[in-house]
Amino acid sequence: MHRRKKTETKRRAKPAPVFKLKAGTPDIKSIDWKLFDERLPSDTDPKHVKKRKEIFRGFDPNGNGYLSLAEIEKGLMTLFHYGMEVKRVVAKSVQRAHRAAKDAIPSKSKKK
Image 1 (cartoon, one colour):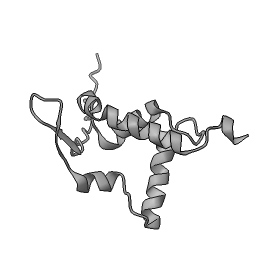
Image 2 (cartoon, helix red, strand yellow):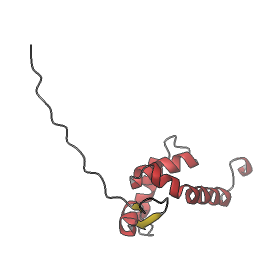
Image 3 (cartoon, helix red, strand yellow):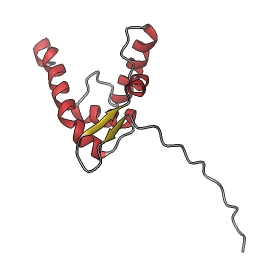
Image 4 (cartoon, helix red, strand yellow):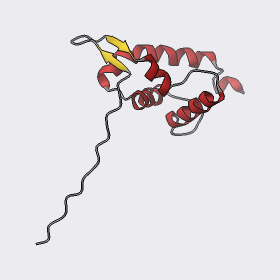
């Protein structure tokens, strides 16, 4: 019989967490704002604007120019590398922000 050579798979280092939870509670203990800003830049600098547009396109898989709540949640989980335990903590804030943004722009049906 032929023996297969073991191929080593490189393990990717886990990215540093942006959000840290308090032990035993559903509350966020701390937020690494420097890391947050690196992953989601908020400056008006053209380089940051370009980065945000790239992030938006990554969040918008169907390319319709609108983000559903599910697309935002999935995108944020990917961008900030957090799991369900953090998602439960930030979910209401994300929902409120999504609703406010949705209410701030004319709907597709009202544009006609």
